[in-house]
Amino acid sequence: MKQDRFLTYILIGIAALVLIALGLFFARGDTALTYGADDTPEGVVHNYIVAVFQKDYEKAYSYLADNENKPTLEQFRQSFLQNSVNADNVGADIGAAELNGSRATVTIFIQYGNNDPFSSGYRNEELASLVKQNGSWRIEQMPYNFWAYEWYQSIPTPFKP
Image (cartoon, rainbow, N blue to C red; front, side, top):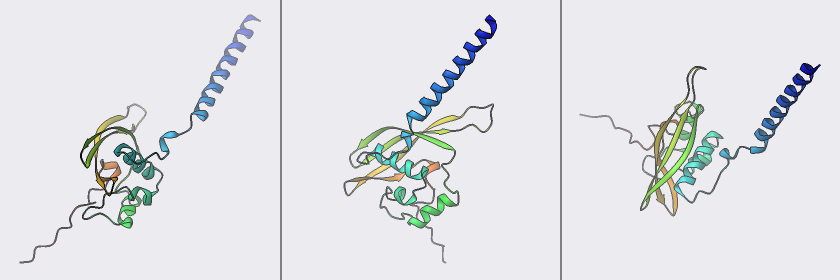
């Protein structure tokens, strides 16, 4: 009889822990994928990454700098749709910004997931470059998973003898 009562208490304790865990999970919300203020370099990088994760390519495109050889919105969108740029298997934490006049560098910690159950993911420290244009911060360069190499690159002209 004592063992049955002990087992009942253990099961009640497990059920209580499961309910608490579920309550915390649903109560915390997902604040990481919400837009914030974009008046700082960190805010612009955060909002760009949120837009990319939410596949809101028009909003993400609005954060790009107006420099020479800027991709068109359609080229930008196609880079994601054709998986030239793929941020699906990474996470990102925005670090501090280093300001230098009208230029800024923002540290981004890119978290790569594990490929199998026996390995752990890893994390790289990357940099994003921004420039202040018309009073707003705009992105000139981002890490690989959020940026295509060919954006802002001059198109080579063939050599004609």
